[in-house]
Length: 362
Image (cartoon, rainbow, N blue to C red; front, top):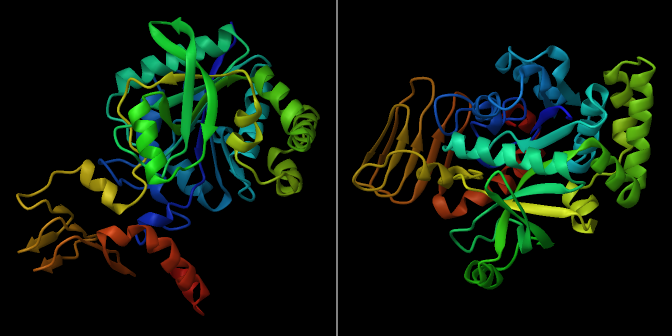
């Protein structure tokens, strides 16, 4: 039987959680929801599935030290730094190289580092079934989330006929992947019942990924082969990545492989899920007062409703007589914005970056 591996992608910037989230300490390294970092929570969920030596983390070069500090149980070599970000398809190709070194027929999961999942048992049961499916057939397995609202911020997966039932979990053939839809289209998807949110969770074997790269992304496969050949000659992974990785095409795995492949199956998730993409999302996971306010740290709201107030380092944040605000304090920056403008934080960061000394706040 092929070995099982987990590869966690932990290289995002988490810009929409500024000013807490920064380039060197982004969202997945922070306790946005819960008492430990999002990455630590992800690791805790997968540890019952595979041994520590079979868990890899692919992160950004400027985050590698912080990731290693948070993951002392993992072998140092299992935390791999990308010299530059090239989106998810090159990261998947790199993951195939890392896993293939250990087991040429290994089956591995690609998982984001920064999602909130409370029902760990259901999550683990779904992943076990996905591992079994990927080991039994030449398929690319994705896990889809049952939508509960017409969200326009997610990609969608249209499921088709039932493919197989494995470990009492239903797998379906995938008809198509759809990019982020308009609100009207998202409402149709929700009403139709055959669309799932694309959560970026995949399980497949090394041979299946290699074959898909050769067929649909030959330039990326060529770069992967250079990395694999270099590793076989005992060259340093860091030196190989420094030379080859920047030359790889910058493309998502959805565009590069999944949307072009006919062997994709989807498992509707049986667990809860939230990508907590911006500050308003934390209100779904923290206790509210009688007026719908969420506070973290030394924060107080007086005569206000539906505010989110976050204080750090013992600083007191006080909000009086306002509704629907986000107020976040850190030692060197404070954010105040309406809840319905949280997506504009990314625009704000572009302006900050353009300032003469703006980099120190990013």
